[in-house]
Length: 380
Image (tube, rainbow, N blue to C red; front, top):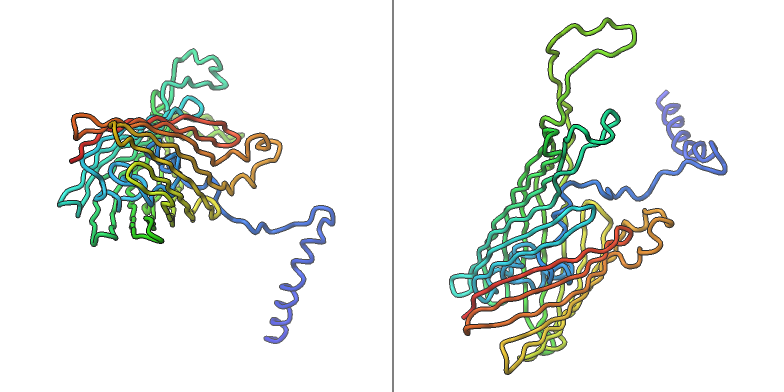
């Protein structure tokens, strides 16, 4: 009997795939080989970046980020800041949504340590509610979405060439805010980053290792998920209760967009007044296939006047484009992942610097957006 069961099992293993294919010769049943969870994570606004400069250079910016920009891209760069710095970024997004990010960072201990805090928000408000019973929004009900991240970062330069940092983030996700009641979720997450910098062929080279959004899932609860439990089955007697019990839908948790970033940057040009940095990165995440990105920044500073300027650009491959319908993304798919921008800065009073940066970002079929950043820093 044991031999018979073994033979039957082997027969099923061999014959079952053929039987599935034979069900429909023209449309065989195939098991998909790519199970990547495209769009399967929550709080994806955590991937939008923190500054126009960083957005123009993509995630590879983590190799050269320092000061306030390091709060998002790689906390290990905090001790490398020239002094206390505060920054604000504004990016009007699609469908009347907005993204804001603000941060404060400062090095201390003669550049051995760095500390900072930040706040980011994505969402919209005041959108009318249209239903089948009220197609013209005569009720005046509105709804909105409010996603917020707040965090603190700390970093230490262990030697003059190596530093490491950690960021702790508190994330809230409020959906259907307004007159609908709302559904919210909260969680904590951690970022870890390292930076190693040295010289190669007499020019600066930097390597970075960053892990972002290690934390719990977002599982929503709230008034928007509650309802009165009526028995509406056919043939059942009418419900005579004046106050039926309240039921609430139980939601599944969705993971954060967890990412591993490996970056490298090399400066083929590095003088007192000009610098050219070439950057590249590899990204592994839980919501898309592995991808690569590359960017470059040319920065110039006047030797006579307290001014400077920079031009930047990057491109990151978008694996999810392969899963979109060709007719939907054909026009702009080749532009998805393109970022270009520049910046200006001005030094005054011998120890202060004001900086403005702009970036044009393209999201393929969705179109493009503009990002603006202003920063103010103190240096010695």
